[in-house]
Length: 554
Image 1 (cartoon, rainbow, N blue to C red):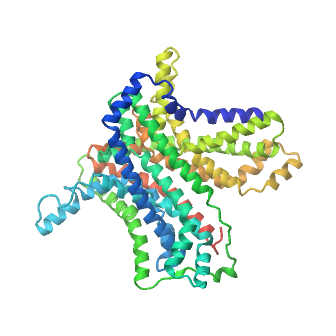
Image 2: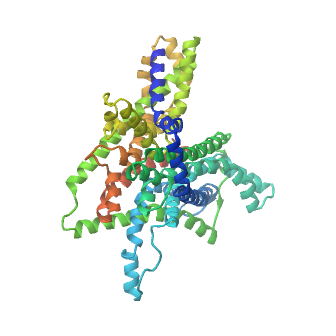
Image 3: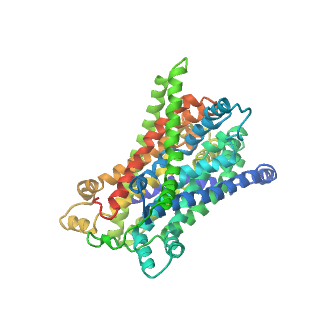
């Protein structure tokens, strides 16, 4: 047990090497590296910083308004369609932001169906509105794709005590706006901050939208420096700057999550009538319906319709027809990579969570204390991975390998990770093991400690305890972890774009390459496949929300 704990800690430590590789690039900075940084500061860095800052501030405002407003509407008020919107607000989670960019660019561009129809109907000429590929459009798309993060956390915070506290404030004579500003908002503020931080981490990590729209951000700058300019120091510097910004957002998210502690006062069947959501009628009910329906329609419903339209046109009018044989290869590559990554991440999460549980309960002596400390640090390292952008991970993997190749070319170690499945799997584990670990740990939180004590008193070994008790009890949590990692890998673009083996394109890479070549009709099929797979976690989340709702059976 001790040996395996140390081995697991070392394995998790190895997954932190990409981040350490990016930060360690400053340790060997010479005069040329500082000159490169000074050159970037005088040329491209201000533009990267300005665009990224505008993107972050505007997206933060947008996801706060949409996510927090929708969460307050479905939690604190009752209006027609509320039960549907409770789960429908999650649907945009299945729609990656870069797919939204492809769809709306095709629909709204000069040669798109909307402008052509308006010109044909009214006889107008020229462009009817500015080019869709702009910073403003990117802000709108990121807001539509990422507001569910704020919605989920805010709804969970308000569902605990929001209705009861609002009702108590009403009985004490507080007016509606005072109840909102002095009761609901303070309750939801930590959740809003945590959700906004998660949305901004996804925004900064994005490459598909920024590259497709031609925006100069930190993410696109990393790829330009590495792939176009072959300037490794510049790429490492940009990656480290982006990593520091993401680290600040992660600190904000962790601090806000630490404040998400509410005493659960879920009413029983008899007490469920004491506090009910406020019933809205008339224009107030219509406004609540519209505030929930518009984000779902623009973030999921309309894009799916446009994707199906593009797919139908491609199948009907293309001379070559749909590349079904090639699509089968792309789908199999995506499926196999996602399946292997999900299995390995889930296995690592199960092993780490089990060892943490065992060492926490049986720690005796210095060796066990060291192992326990190493496992605790390993868990924190894995939890940081999801916050690291894919571009930073790719640079963090390739940068040390480039130095190793220059120092010892005879070893051949870089060939094992550069353009191979092994390097890609390492990037996936660094990026998504945190998702699996969180799902497994939430499952372990529902397993009473008395189960372990009883089994140990009956003479069960740790491995028998894991095999015959923990694994059956954690079956649903492990399956959820595998599915979540599977879907995340299916949608992942930046790291896959750099580290994938030759002739091993995934659906996300193919959709991006086709859209970049203005072959949006052909990009519809892989994009729609990604969206359909992305519905899996949405279904899981919606079922979990219904099970946790008062009066609902789990």
